[in-house]
Image (cartoon, rainbow, N blue to C red; front, side):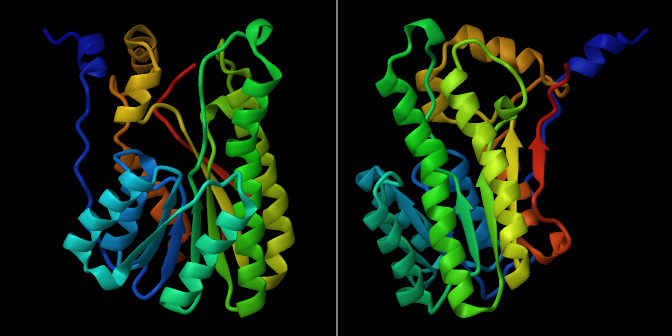
Amino acid sequence: MTDNKAQHKAPHKAQYVPGHGLLDGRTAVVTAAAGAGIGGATARRLLEEGARVVIGDAHARRLKETERTLAETFGAHRVASLPCDVTEEDQVGALFALAAREHGGLDIVVNNAGLGGTRALVDMSDQEWAKVLDVTLNGTFRCTRAALRAFQETGRGGVIVNNASVLGWRAQAGQAHYAAAKAGVMALTRCAAVEAADYGVRVNAVAPSLALHPHLVKVTSAELLEELTAREAFGRHAEPWEVANVIVFLASGYSSYLTGEVVSVSSQHP
């Protein structure tokens, strides 16, 4: 006799979806795209769908390594990079200027930059609070503003996809700063979408629950990761490329009537 509960909890292994040319000829900017996290996976998926990409990250060495790896697979003419700290307005401007210079314009922006950490609210300093808010929320604001200005100038429409988090909806101890920032990203997404609709720009967000990558493993205890994984209906964490798949959907024509929405990328149950 089959144990239904055990069967339900058995991890479901996802199959990688090949590209279908959904973004042929389009140009995308992706922030925090170095390494093996959601940003790096998104850059790869955009390239697999036919886009050209400009990637930015505050970690210059890892960024250059990521550019080299992507260029070897997809061609150097389709990949460019520039170090970008999203807390610095001039660096944000330089990243968007590179997209215009290298590829003649801009079609897609993925705001992936964010900063987390775990600290009880009673122990949190003003500096810890401000740093997380400046990268995660203010950085998304700066890049969204730059994107909207670029889209207004060209007049050919465009798409912005922000990376939020289920913590913008749900409570987790030690995450007050990060949760507040991600809730702010959700609100920013909705307001920007209303403003941008008049000139044909769509603005949406994804809200992942648990997408495991090397950086998250370094900053999160094994006990907490095990606890969070147990909450997922599939009995496993998401792969970064599974979040990237939803970002590709939101960037593509398949979501042409979708704006101001936050899409949960989660199998988490209450």
